Length: 349
Ligand SMILES: NC(=O)c1ccc[n+]([C@@H]2O[C@H](COP(=O)([O-])OP(=O)(O)OC[C@H]3O[C@@H](n4cnc5c(N)ncnc54)[C@H](OP(=O)(O)O)[C@@H]3O)[C@@H](O)[C@H]2O)c1
Image 1 (tube, helix red, strand yellow):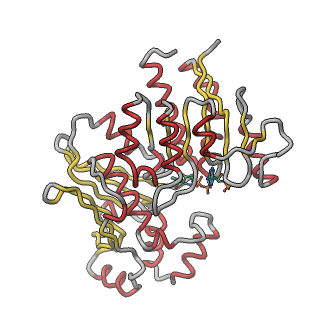
Image 2 (image 1 turned 60 degrees about the vertical axis):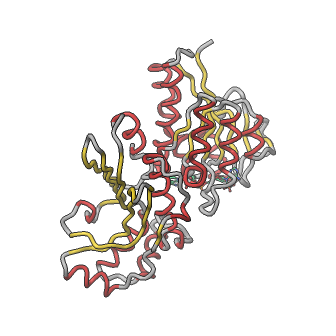
């Protein structure tokens, strides 16, 4: 029998469906290059049912059912009434994908899903930043103790290889400072305000374009940026902090007059994130700040950007343009492929 990798997906929304599209497209190529047949054996949703099949679920059919009927077909032999925690704790799988919605206030129940999988010696890929922001050290140590992978490239800058670059290409570099713009919604709002557009019109266009949530308060108040900064500081600088420890100011106090005043000084206003060591402790701050118009952070086409300050490689900056769901799916996909790389490296073939 050939090599198999079975995947359990908790959540089948934007990220889950994007992962499914990429896996379906690349399945044969993965088999040819690694010998692994990657099968999704469980898909759990919050309110649309669960599908399970040891032989593997037809992902295009699962997506069709959700898009056409709004739920999985309850008459299908693969249909189950099983919730995420039970799947994490009892189902037969090699890799758990944590793709449920973010709980920005506590990281739960995703932390419990991940803890359950890692405790059973299962690999975990998370697109959900909550667990990384609220319980990174515990989960990382549990993964290490049980010799399994815990990957999360999608959590910050949706698939842009920030964590992969740091782990593979910056080995033995010490990162002493992280700077960036991590929230695409506020970046867009500030850019459009710079054109003199009123907030209501900007938000209306963003929602109609499908790139702004119905509720943007977590973005506007800086909570989302603070959670992403926390993840970066926890992973790259072992900060051991939680989002409530970030000094946070959102963009709700920014008025058109502030943007005009900044422009008169040759600057633009951005929601800036920064983390560095102060008195031996990693501290993080999210707040609007001015950036010179010719600075790379001021590029109007930019969705997100991160700069890492290192001892051996100086300052490195990674820029994200374009915000496609494919990039989100790719982050989850590439992490899953890294699990195969690890298994191949261990000779478990
Ligand atoms: N979308 C992006 O571009 C993006 C980028 C980076 C990171 N992420 C992260 O990826 C995760 C998923 O995002 P998304 O955009 O795919 O969200 P989404 O479109 O809202 O989908 C969430 C999925 O999770 C399911 N779900 C909700 N509660 C659940 C529970 N308790 N147990 C099992 N399934 C549950 C939902 O099912 P129901 O519909 O039935 O509730 C739905 O299938 C989030 O943590 C998000 O922050 C997303």
